[in-house]
Image (tube, rainbow, N blue to C red; front, side, top):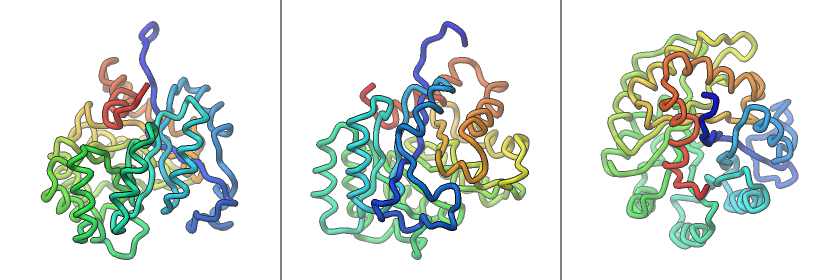
Length: 284
């Protein structure tokens, strides 16, 4: 692809600052993750691999963390947008949403569904009422889920087939185990909704952290390409969470090796940047 100009986007990464104290999941037991990760840590890594812009995604269920990420957006040109957090069950959701929408860098919302006790939270009445606002505004919803949540997401999509949504980390399939009919069948159904995309991200942390091989991921990624197509996939590093199982370089090389041999130049350009730009309607 020498001589071809295109924008490469990492559509899923995180920043956090321990002293903020709103990362309840982040404890000393998290080892390598239990430290600050900020833009100056990531910038040399993306430059090394020719990544032009990134989407920073919330890692704490607080509006304050979203505002912290929007501050970083205003200071660092490589951050193209922020997928933040709002309480979709709160009576104040509408006001909070409209306030954040005034900021150019606010490009999406992500509830942390895989951390909630109720697997059916996303289809609660008050949540659905507020999602209706997102649908009417055609505003993106990131879905952080496990495979067990896929049938519930399908219920949501049956109610709101026009919802612009993206499945994070391919719904976290157990890469270290064989690909399952349950994951295949439900991802097929999810992919039948034309406004739903999927991130090829966060996969190495679902593999054997010490002994994963590129071949472990190929059947999962091939299936995603088959059902979502070239126009509805995007690359994400899930840095720094990926450090539990490998480096930024490991993730990028896995993505490259899994896709390049099967894709045309035009198709690759879509997954490495164009799709994310269009989905989040980035101001590049």
